[in-house]
Image 1: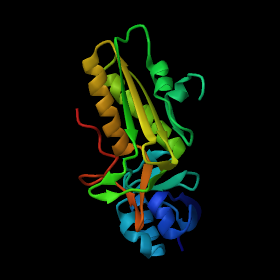
Image 2: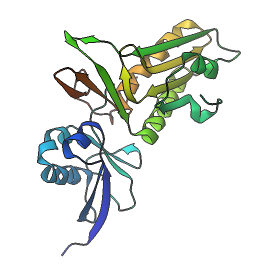
Image 3: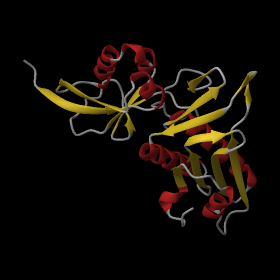
Length: 239
């Protein structure tokens, strides 16, 4: 008989809603792979299986490949497709919060004597999408991993544009029409790099940062995933 181990898997957004759980404990065989874990979760939660199949497992806040083995001490999370006031410290450059966001705060964080341009991107809650009226949005995040991935995006930017400094903040919870959901600030010696790095940051955020958006309408609601292409956050960014 194979040796068994106990693991716990965290659920978010649509998967949490479909299963009615935020976490689940499982007794599994030692050496189980991520792919086998996905199969097991689909078997246990058949109503959520289509979404589980489109999801990715993270181990210790890193996206894992299907052949990676799971250990009992791992922090394990099932990541469905993502949507897309403190003193300045390195950790405050990348924030997920329930509080209202401030562009001025992020501008102060990235401003520096070498910067000749500061670009801010501000995402807000719109009322109409493809002819359908949104009442409000609900955002949810795997906060520690989300902030870690934001920092990784900034590291990617620093390799491409060494003089650019970036800060990102995303709000979670219930947001009304017109409220700010995300802000990115990019400071650079020249405006071209600020524009390019800022656009790169928001596109990568939508690809790899585990933040989910639920659109709520008068006649229903839906957790929104990527707007295009097959979603796989493990894919390296194109050069």
